[in-house]
Length: 467
Image (cartoon, rainbow, N blue to C red; front, top):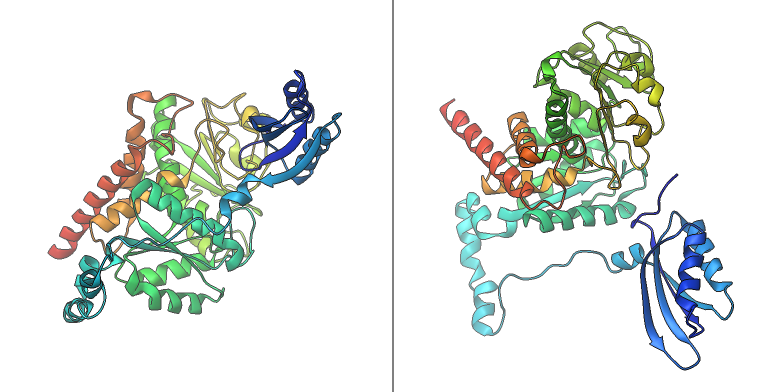
């Protein structure tokens, strides 16, 4: 049964009688209808009444109404106002621009702006590389979306995608001190997106593509990488792949299996699944079997698009056919980035000994984690209310911190693998079946990833110079 979480939290302000039993009556009413009480604050006290703020986690708008009704129906209680705490956090947006220099007097203004700024402009015109040294470019990333594949919401458009991109930018700043800015494009035309990002690129030292639907995202990323001299990183692909590879490295340590002897099933062959497969292939597993809505991907399956054809050529060495359930028989690892409730404990029981299950569909995974745990040795999800959360926040802030510090012009698989290894290494001797990746709030993660990516980027630079 779902448990209310902080993503849907309400604060109810109400008046209640000043009786000794008031607090107990109010908290009992919340619990009776399934709310999770998180705060109880008396904000006013009078001889004939108290004013109380009750904060609770709920499941939905209907559940919030049930809690409000339960409180309002108590004798002498009157609900004044109900606030949605998530909406309150988003009022006015989550970002602002703050100057890094003081503008206290005319001298400051003359240096920061005209006439002094003209000499800085001339220096950059004479040497464009100086833009990284003398402007915000050195530490700034564009978070670019067309709103076509937002979280689990689908094609909701650029304006509705903006809260997510703001959140992404806030995470960049929080975890890696990277100045990121949302760029939500009012077009879903591949050519127009590429032209627009190219036109905006002089401001930024990196491009983070976000929530752009497959298969267009593949071409957009590929062509921008070819045409720009700054790193282009599609987080839905590569951020997910980095954390999955890190988590799998540690999960295989828990069960003492070498990846070279493992058969891995990947459910979902969109942006994330394709990138996971590509990065895992660098680890040389025994085999990878990809599965999508039409079943197992194999070379003879009709109707394969370009992405699926490439995957079919590099996976499924036995040319297995059938369904996801067929693919799971004898598999060592399941990685899902697809859809909820695709299989149960009985299918996990058909996997190899000590199976690993990464059920990452959000908010509802491919299998209930409690069901998976009946037979799996290690279980991971994308959720924060279970152990082993596979979260891109472990990757993208540190990845871009490293790229920016190295003044990198590109990103490649060596850098992605370096990031994955750095995340896995942070776990160190704390490793167990319930702790295969560090917490997103572990302050060691982003610096470790940044150092690893910076070192890999500089190695690539040396190799490119020699070539």
